Length: 64
Image (cartoon, rainbow, N blue to C red; front, side, top):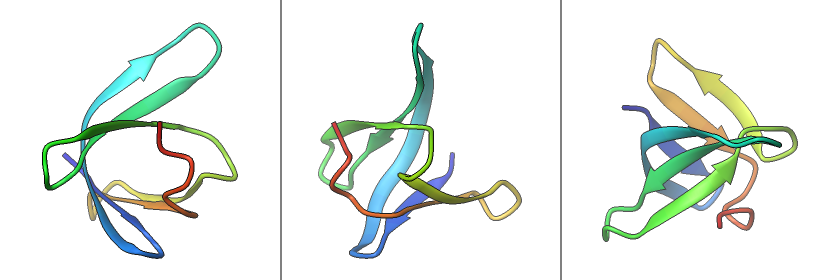
């Protein structure tokens, strides 16, 4: 799966995409095993590089 980064460095890797009624999210597993969800929308997602398997976040403050 894709690596997730923010301006603070590597956040983790995408393990799942969840489809919710109002918004879709990425499930991200941090190196320490914690899991977070990130809304797939601006302004949180800056760039998605499918070939390079990279998701770049604007910050890590939006992680839930």
